[in-house]
Length: 239
Image (cartoon, rainbow, N blue to C red):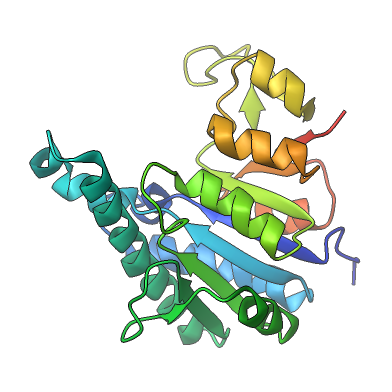
């Protein structure tokens, strides 16, 4: 069996990734496909943490949030990520993979609070740890939460799952000649204003020398190929 290139990873999933072809909510075949990809990685012995967004749920209430206080809207978004985390945990359970949800907001009837030491112990036990509610603070994105949790758990890499198979020089849907970058430095990504992650997350990862790989979660086997160190997605690293 091929040896994984990483011992511990932090996977960043957007809430929109769970929608599949739907306009909002959670698409059952889509979430089943995602957890099967995660299960393959876990079977390789890779310790896996997940940070998940809430756009698929919050998008449905966003029109009603127009003009709302930003902090209140952000807390609503955090609650949406908890719903997604519970759905992900349940989908993992259905295929025999143990998962634990840890929330940055204190809602102990639903999920245990985020405790770094516990999270690391769960990872060492082979459980998938799903970090919900972002950082627990408004004005920070789940990209920033992924960078923060990745550093806290000692991840070897942050894997950002998207709808495209890497970072391109231009929009590949518009420009068929757009080139996929195989590797980029953090400084190149920042200077070229490439939409890798938000600026706070990107700077955190750069300052802590925590690499990022952007890949497509909808490309069959892509997550496993990234884990095995193959040419998949785009790696962003310190120069």
